[in-house]
Image 1 (cartoon, rainbow, N blue to C red):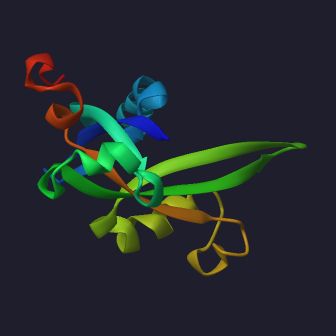
Image 2 (tube, rainbow, N blue to C red):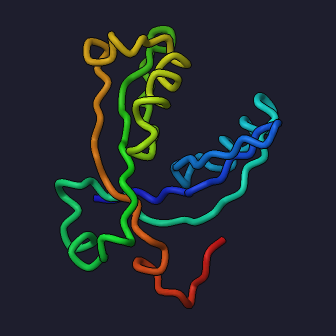
Length: 140
């Protein structure tokens, strides 16, 4: 099973630029949050499918290796009063060691406590837009 993600370019004050992968259903909310709270400019680069590496099946079989970006899904549950809220975030594989501790700190989890806190990492791939939809659809 896959999930649609937006590959977004984040430009911070001072010229630092990074890439984030954000679930499509929360992209507008996330973009507003990043601008209002962090002063970041956000540009959607591409919308495409993310699939779990171990069960990507047909989506992976038909996609050239060059059209796959390694992206890790980070899942855990946040307690909000008496309720719980599932959290899913996506990090480029090569940024995982740097970004994961920062992400978890936003939820009060120290990296050394991640396993005990129920943090689950699932490797997967963000598949090239053209490979999924064909070049006639273009990118956002």
